[in-house]
Each structure stands twice: as C-alpha cells, then as structure tokens.
Length: 638
View (tube, rainbow, N blue to C red):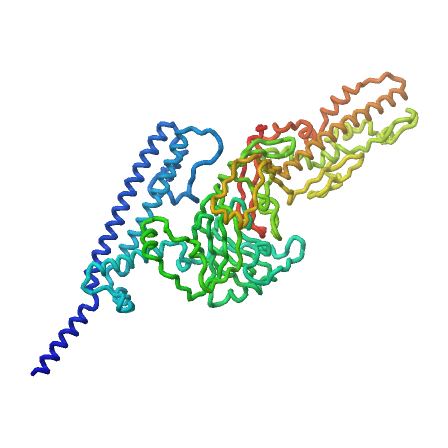
C-alpha cells in the first residue's frame, strides 16, 4: 500500500510538471497582441491628427499667400491628401538657392515637408497594424511551442510567471517586425529583378577590349566596361531609369575574377550605403550569356548624399545575427538605432565583386530640364543658365568604353523654312550657275561665252527660279566637312549625327570618389553659371552666317557681271547705257528663288518661333534611349 501511494504521488508531481512546463499560449499572446494593436491604433490616431493639423496650416498659408491651390498641391489635392508621401520620388528639402526668399513661401515649403514626414510615419504605423492583425501566430500557437522547446532550459522564464512570458512574446514580435522593416537586412530582398535588358555596346570605341590590370576582387571601377549608376556621377536620380533597374557591365577578360560566384552557393545583392551610414540592399542577378550583373534600384535616394554601391555575393546559408532588443524597439517605433550601421555591412563569407561611388541628385528628369531653361546666346549657339545640379563631364563626354549618354537635338519644326533652305538645291544652283567669267581686258568686239550663248538675255539666267536646280549635282547629306563649289563657294558642313555638345561651368563639377564618401557629410553644391554649347545649333548658326555672306556676295557678283555685259553691248551698238546697277539689283531681288530669299531675310532670333531642344539620354554603355524630352526656350531671350 505504501508503494502504491508513493507511485501515485510521483505521478501527480510529473503530471503537474508536464502541465506547467509551458504556459497557456492563448492567455499569453492575446493580451500582447491587444496591447501592441492598441499602441499602433493610438499612434495612427496621433499621426492622423498631426497630419490634419499640418494640412490646416498649409491651407491657411496658401490662402494667405494667394497661391493657386493646384499649383502647390496638384490636381485633386494629391500632394496634400493622406498618402501624399508616396507621390514623391525622393525626400523633399528646403530650396538651398542663395537668394532672398519670401518668408511666407519658405514657411509653406517647410510645412509641406513636415506633412511629408508625418504622412510617412502614419503609413509606417498602418503597415505595423496590418502585420499584427494578419500575423499567423496571433491565433495559432505552434510557433510559440516550438520556440519554447528550442530554448535552453536555463533561459526559459518560469511557466507560472505570466508577465515574463508576455514580455518574451512581445519582444519576439517587436524584433520580428523590426527585422522585416530594417532595410539593412539583406535576407529581406527576394523580389525578382526587373526584366529590363538593354543592348550593351560590346566593342569599345577604340576597337580593342581593355585587358584588366588586376585579376582579383574587388574589380576596380576603371576596369568596368560601364555601369548604371555611373562611377563618379555627380547627380544620379532614380527617375533616370523608368524600369528601375541598374547594372554593372564587365569586360569578358575579368570574368575569371568573379566566375565562381555565379554558381550555386551564393546570392547576389546590391548593397547601398550613404555618407550618413544608411544601409540597405536590393536584389541582383547574373544574366546568362552576358558579362554583367543587373539589380533593382531603390525607390528613392537621399539628395546630396554620396553613396557607395557594392555588388556582393553572399553565402546562400547566411543567417543574420539577431538585433539587440534595444535596436529592435527603436526600429519598431521609427527611431534611428544607436548602434553603428557600419558594423552591419560586412557579412561572413561574402565577396565584394566591385564597388562604385556616386552622389544622389536633387531633381528628377523633368525638374532638371526646368533648371536649364535659361537665355540663348545666339552668337555662340549656347544656352546660359544657373543651377545647383549641372550635367557632369561623364554624362556629356562618356567614360571608359562608353560614349556620351546625353545629347541635345534641334527641333526644326519651328524654323523649318530656314533649315530646309540651308540645304536646298535652289541655293547651290544660285551660287554657281551660270559660271561668271572674267571680262577685264576683253574688247567689246570680241564676244565672250556669256554673249555667245545668250547668257545676257536667257530667262532662266535672269530669273534663276525658272532654272532646273534639281539637276544640280547632289551633295552628301551627312557632311562632316565643308565641300568646295565652283566660283570659290562652299557647301557648309552638315553633320546630321553625333554632333558634340559641351557644357562649361563657372564652378568645377567634381568626380565623386571614395574620399567624398568618407567625408561623413552630404555634398552640397552652390548654384553655378552653366553654358551649354549645343553642337547642332552652333552648326546651324555657322551655316546661316556663311550662306548669308555667300548669297550676298553672289548677288553683287551677278549684278556686276550683268552690268558689265550691258556696258559691252551698249559700246558695240553705240547706244547709251540704258540700265543702272541699282536697277539690276532691284531686278535680282525680285527674281530670287524662294529659298535664297528666305535665307537672306532670316533674322536671328526672329526666325525661330521657339528654340526647342530635344534632350536625349541613353543608358551608359548602350545605344538604348532612357528618355527623350523637350526643353523649350523662348527664342527672343537674349
């Protein structure tokens, strides 16, 4: 009996231990989720209230300043309504232009920026609320049981200490959400790389592929065939690429350096770090049959920040070390962690394939073009403007094996009469037909060729437009150099493709390097005067000046020739001279071909309805256009 009683008591003890080995997860998790959801709801209500107050402040400022509402907040209030931050391509900042500005305008601007960050904070809490409401472990408890069993016994809270288990679950949820929203965690980025696949230029401009000077990692930027963003780029903006995809293009000779990282065992990532130590990743991939890697661009970059962009191969079995609870709580509640981000960038077993440095730009493509709408220098074929973000030399001139990625093309629709006249057969026919022969020293009784073949009176000679200009010998349409014509005239150069543009800035535009990145501060650039020399406009103005001079000289030459022939005829016939040079000039003007008259009458800049330039931009190292936009400049701006 004693033994039976002892065994029964032992059974009760073991049963009690089994029952209380784990807490009642329903009783533990329910109040945790309720508490975190209440915090999220309170934060959402606070942020909504704050945003509404800022909107009211903006509305009063707009009314006080008398601004057109749509101009400030867009159609349908899209730049002030809830969710407005999603419509910005980058974080807004006060205009840094060095000029006196209206205090009310500055106040409106700063209020709009406050609304942006308040709206962004609101949507961060809405995201957290959604994650909590739809969390799979809110009503299913297997995960908590599993984690309990995986914990070392000495680390488990007492099963009866209900508050301790609630705190344990709360910490686990907070760290989970913090990890999911922490941009410095490479394991987050599993999305597919965009399908953008530009045709890269395989043959360098000099016709020979450059051999790398090193055959180890990381591959230096100067050994890249091309990259996007470009190494050293002064003002890169993600709006430059509508597909939001960037790339590194390697020479085939450098494949030995990175070849083994293209196979199983590694995941490819693009790692971005700014001067203020913001760190995040985007997904990258190798493309079959290409010497290149492609990666997704981030949605935004902080303007003025210098970035280091690395292509890294990370071991597939990588597991990120757990963040500290303090860091989890700060990330969860939208505060900047105290721990240094620089300590999170290196990953055990990783390989840095290559790295470049660039600066994030302030303006998207259309905003940047607006800053270039300056005054036209008609004498030199240039546009003069002031901006704090000029195009840089590598955009205008190219780099490595990649040609220039930006060029400007004249939109000729606004002055098509003049443009067509410059290359009209009528003009060249007028300049050289008939051939004017010398008459000096020839007595009137000795007939010259012009008198023998009736040049003096032939209708098509006096009225050149009655002639046959289409039979004039054809000229090459794409002329790199001027072509000599009879009578010491020339057909000016008419290069239709690849006319070089150039940009001269009063302040030197820096090439961004590692030194700028390690400076630990944003790279500010004061507004500077820029002179954009448009190659096609320079060619056009040069051709116009030359043709106007040649046509004027030809008119004088023809009038003098006809006058001398009339004098010779009057002398032979013994009659008085019946015409004057002035009368012959009037007759010449009356009978000019239309294209000749259009050129002679053309006045600069009046003949331009508007100066419209087509801003063409290509992806670096390709012949594929990334954008083609109009830049309209009032033609009468001087």
